[in-house]
Length: 184
Image (cartoon, rainbow, N blue to C red):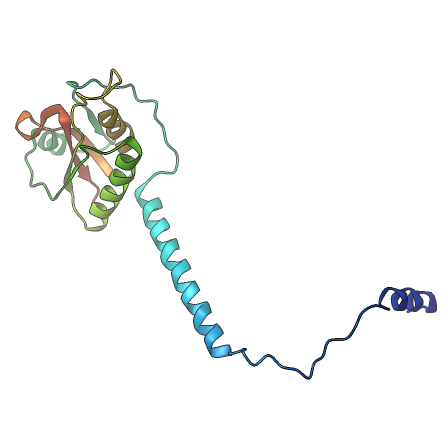
C-alpha cells in the first residue's frame, strides 16, 4: 500500500473506535440456536411438501374458456384414453361413492378452495369415485348458476380427474357431478 493510500485510509478511519472484544455475550447458546434452526427447517419442509402435493394435484395454469352451462344442462368431461365402459359407469352412477362434498351455502371463493382441498385429499386417500354437489343455482342472481359453472370449469383443470359427469336424477341430476380420479 502506498503512503498516499495509507493516509487516505487513516483519514477515513479517524472516528472509528475498536470493539471491546473482552466482553462476551452470555446468551449465546449453540444448542438452542441449532434446535431453533431445525424447527424452522422442519416447518419450511412441511410447507414445501404441502405445496408440492397441491402442485401434483393441480395444473398451474387455468383455462376458463369453457362456455357457461345452465341449471338444467348436464355436464360431461373426460380425458383422452378413458374407456367407454368407465365413462358409461360414471354417467349412470354405477359405483360406490367414497366421498361427497356439498357446496350449498358456500361463496365462490370458499367453494373453489373447498373443491381443491377435497379433490387433493381424496386423491391422496386413493379414492377413485367421488361426488360434488353444487346445486342447480336457483338462487343465483346471474343467469347461469355460479357454483355449477365454477365446478365445471375448475374440475377440467385438475390433473388427477380423469372424468366427471352430471349425476343421474336419483342422485341429484344436474345439481351434482360424479368424479373419476386417477389411480396412483
